[in-house]
Amino acid sequence: MRITINTFTELQHNEDHIHLAFSSPQRVISSAILNGGLIKADHILNQKVPKHSSACEAPEKSLNDYAKAQGWQGHVVGMMTAASMSSLRIEQACVEGMDITVLVTTGMSNARRAGDKADIQALLGTTDEVGTINLIIIFSAPLTDAALVEAMMIASEAKAAALQNAKVLSPVSGLLATGTGTDAIAVVCGEGLQKIKFCGKHVLLGEWIGRLVITAVTRSLAFEV
Image 1: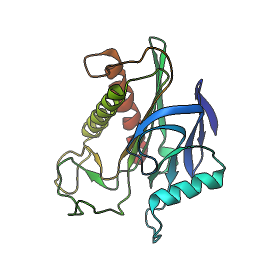
Image 2: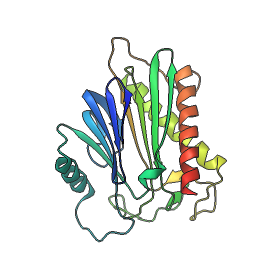
Image 3: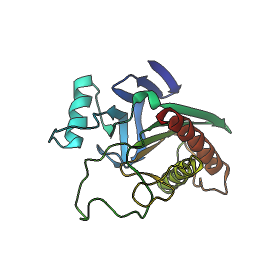
């Protein structure tokens, strides 16, 4: 399936991956495995991986090799998930001329609450756990670096609110979960002369980020259940 998200983004969705292709490099901030941080990206990949794998290859190399095999040119921001690609839910709105799109895939096999005792008790430790709520948010207008970080914060709060509404529990603490142990998020913004500086809960953009993320995660959770 291929659809146009906005004037600079095309979505490809199949059982193996979700691929966003940008018509020109866009500013992306993310916690992604491949090319996380703040970069200009040409693509975002959310790849389906097996729940149980004996592969020893580093996940960032696996993602990079997969992107190259698809023939995608330029910088790729890459995420992984064991969740079904059929859990994809998309919510969109146009707010004062700015398009906002939220995409989410959801797997809840390793639900956790922030502050739960970690499985890996080492600062440089890694985990093989899978599950994962992967969130991608796309704004058609530009945001400052600070606003991009704030958007990630509001989206994370909204994800936690959706899980609490659904009464998802952490198997570690038995308390309401706020996410999974392997969640990832990416926020994309477009171009323009006037950058948005604020998107907290007191301003309109923050309200819409919260609304769209809560709705998208709630609908995706319904598929998972």
